[in-house]
Image (cartoon, rainbow, N blue to C red; front, side, top):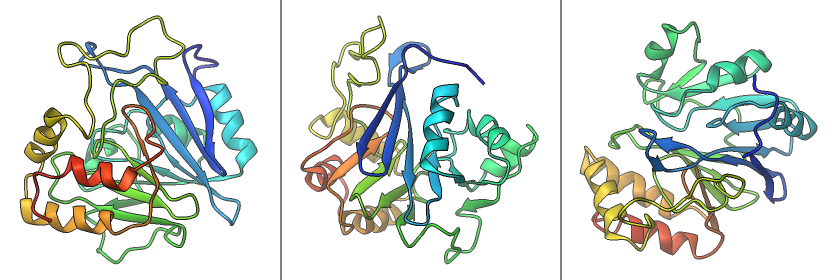
Length: 244
């Protein structure tokens, strides 16, 4: 476990919701940025979408929030740090998506649940405060989560808001995307990308509609700046190529 990363930004976004943001370059070239999100539930337990290293200061912050009970993978590709989180929180349940369990089993990590593989009505214990929608038709098999008390939509690759200025705010590297500059709900590039990642358009229409009916005011994504206003309109704009 890294002791400290000088480029890590730890922030309380709103009451009981914390983010851990830092640089991450896709293919060591494209500055997507990375973010872990933690939500403290009314029970005192902590739910974590883990997508950055578990540094000492990350762990210190989480431990002050309460006992980590769930360690979540946002989709089939956001799994790099699940093992170190599980090692530090052995009593926590690790939840992923269909296909991830077989991949991680080779690395000695057993999942406690898989969206898309478990029965659709499976409950993992946090659903009273965090809604979930598994996007079976999405290429990366993402899950959208909504922390109901804070009205926060938490996602991995279902939404981008680049450049990630917060994620690169402590870095000497630039957050600016090569050639395009931005990748957000206003850009046709993101709309085309999200449409191309929809492998089953009927399933996508269903799940996009489910999320759009949730009550959320912000979007906390793994890649890019947290969107603090007009979040519902931004979600609908990003998926406007679909017929929902």
